[in-house]
Figure (tube, rainbow, N blue to C red):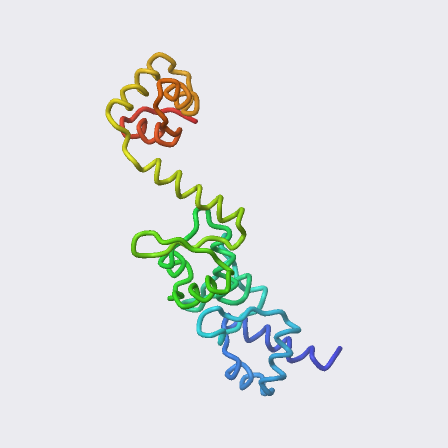
Length: 213
């Protein structure tokens, strides 16, 4: 048994009582210096918080991270990736259509406008003006392009179709009730009108017409 075994066992015992600790109270409980406790934490495996300037610690075995790689204990936030900047980059990169600063802040439960601007300046994220705010995208060009395309599709789908186009679609559906949204879109295109399958899906939902893609 090494000399580190006892303090590490004590660390596990303390974290069973309280899942998050700051370094000074933890060192006081263990009766070791702060540098020694930091070494013990490395041995045990730990995460430091991305909130509170990284002042809080938890053991690696404790967090139950959500699908965005985040875990919160009360107001303290932890990320699989460690730091706040790494958490933001991971979350934005994995997003379907980019994220606004407000969306990122809501997920992280903290304000991060200045961090986002810094990441953009360092080319760790891309961004695009949208109204009064910015939408942030992944730094990788292919991923960012896919996210931008997703936004375009969402905007198109949200736009109401003109009445005459809606009539074309419904008439075509009556003629071909087995046609899916993609087939209906192609049929309408032959009439010289361009609509997306998502717009047709929205139209059917508006009129309560049930149909699967």
